[in-house]
Amino acid sequence: MVVLRSQSKKESEKVVIKNIIKYDDDIDNSRMYGYKFEMSDSNMNIIARMSSNSQCCEKLGVYSVAKMEDYIGAEYKSIKIIKKEEGNWYEEENMIFVEISSDRGDIVFYLYNIHNGNYRSNVYVESENGKESYRI
Image (cartoon, rainbow, N blue to C red; front, top):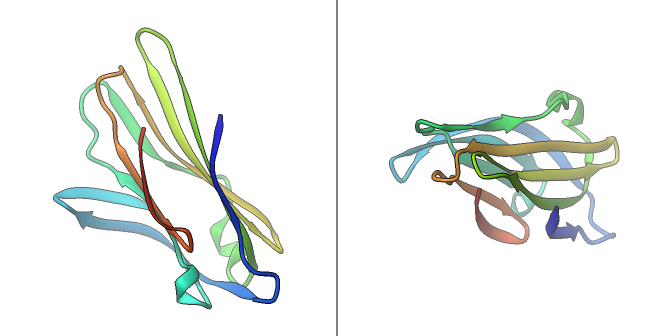
């Protein structure tokens, strides 16, 4: 497991999670889904999404056990992005974990792609760090 990005807001700023949206949109002729976290400071919004056009021998999605509505109104603290890749000769399991820390605890979700090694999907993460993309 590799920590790709970890960033905290400035201590003097208080940024609150105003809304959490299940993200669903068409981008570049591909269906994308994930989550969008709207903050009291729109420059701090977080969007994490991936392609949902699965092909044969590929299973992908987004998963979280967190009750997202419990975090609306919480103070945002930091974001951490972790990439995990596992596999063997017939199957690969790749994930991007997104951990958003708040004063109510951590919101953790992951975007995953399980495939036979021939298929990769793009994951896009937008935050105060800018826009980043990963192949999983």
